[in-house]
Each structure stands twice: as C-alpha cells, then as structure tokens.
Length: 338
Image (cartoon, rainbow, N blue to C red; front, side, top):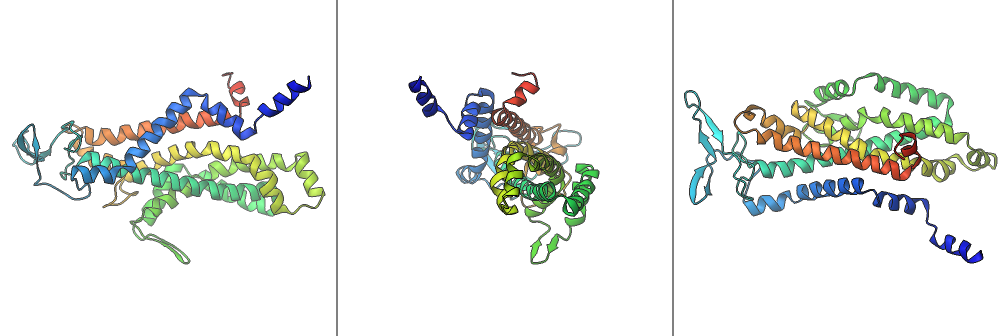
C-alpha cells in the first residue's frame, strides 16, 4: 500500500504540467497551433523571400518584365477588354520567386506583399492583445479587490466603453486620430505609425476582458484563503500578486488567442477602410483593398490575404478552445462534450 502511494506521489504533476499534457493530447488544438506557427514563420521569412526573388513589394514596378517559360513577359499587360484602354497586372505564374500569385495594380509582387503584410497584421494583433490584457487586468483586479469608490469609477468607465459598438468606436477613434496622431504627455504617436492602430484596437476591447476578470476577482475576494490572508494583515499588493493573480492567470491565457483573432479581424477592417495601417506599410487588410478593383480580372490579389486571415483566425479560435478545455476540464462537461 505504501509503495502504491509513493508511486502515485512520484507520478503526480503540477496543475500547469497537467494542463499542458492535456493540451498536447488534443490533436485538433495541436494541429491548429502547428498551422498558426507555420503561417507566422512564413510571414517572418518575408525579407528572405523578397531578397531571393529580387522583389520590391513596396515600390511600383509598372514597367517591369519577367521571363516566363523562356519568354519575356510584361508585368503589366495591355487590357484586351472594351476599348483596350489601361493595363492588367500579370496573373499567378505558380512559380516561386517569379510573381507566384501575380501582381497588383502597381505591378508589385502579391506574394511578397502578402508575407510582409502578415508581419504587420500579427504585430498589431499581438501588441494590441498585450495592451488590452495588461490594462484590463489592472482595472479588473483593482475594481474587484478594492471595491467601493474605485470599483464604481472603473466600472462606469468600462460601461461607457461597453456602450459603444466595437467597430463604431474603433472607426470613430481612427478617423479622429489618423490625421494628427495622438499625444499623451511625453508619449507621441504619429498618424502613420503602427502604434496608432495598436492603441485604438487595444482600447476598444478592454471592457470585454476587464469585466470577466472583475467578476472572478469578486468571487476570489470572498474565498477563505483570501479572507484568511486579510485577517492576518497581509499587505493588499501581496494578496493581489500572490493569491489572486495566479488564480485569474488561466483566464488571461485563454483570452490570448481569442483576443488575437478579434484584433486581427478589427485591424483588417480598419485597414480595408484606409483608417488602419497607412502606406507605405501594408497589412492583409490593405492588400484586400488594393485588390478590390481587380476582383473580376485578378481575384487572387484580394482572395489570398482574405484566405490568410480566415486560416489565422480559425486556428486561433480552435487553439483558444483547446486551451480552455486544457486549463478548465469542467468546461467540457458544462458544454456536454465530456
């Protein structure tokens, strides 16, 4: 009997190790994580691809020519429709390094721009997620733990932000700030900076994270171990960081992929409306806008970044579900999935 108990103790693992093992056994979540990392790595290799292909994704090349199947072909072809006025960009060659996905209306390589645009899309979505989680956690912890006047003020601020539809608030802030940027004391964000959409997107989603955190902290505030710590005179900051924050950390982890997916969609919408990422920078949203006028002649200019957004958001949502199930197995029972 003693040997059985000892073996059980040796084999026991901490909650984080158990959760990671449970996530590792979730094949769907692991497949989503692998696909997401593959997309991310491909985007990070954008400079390598552009250098190898000798492409300039941010410079118009209307007079460029390429060699295709032993023949010299213009990147911008004379239009054969109607009166034959104007030019059409070359379509997909399906040859890596040689306008694989064709060109846009400026003669720029779509594949190179797709990869570079992915870097900015992931950067904005990731940074905005960290921005949202940090300020939402601070507000949720303060409101839930201290209560009283602090809770009243912070809750009303969150209610005001909550009252605005997400995209309406994001679009309104973008239109106001896109022309002049923003200045907060010593911090100045220029209108064309990538930090501007990060700031805007990060702000609009704070209530959607802070309110669940506040509710969880309110519940923990009445738990026996917190009340015991308060009774023993433990400082508030120590209780917050040693007792309460570790208990809400699983919720924050689950929020990471879900918020990244939402932020990516929001950034794409703003950039498509020309109030997100500004030229000469590019994101998947701006590339879709570039291909809007080519939907009938060169649909891949818009479809390629659209498909990249769909795959990225899908993998992030599936990964978020896997993290939730791994960190809180009871959620599967509640949803009837156990």
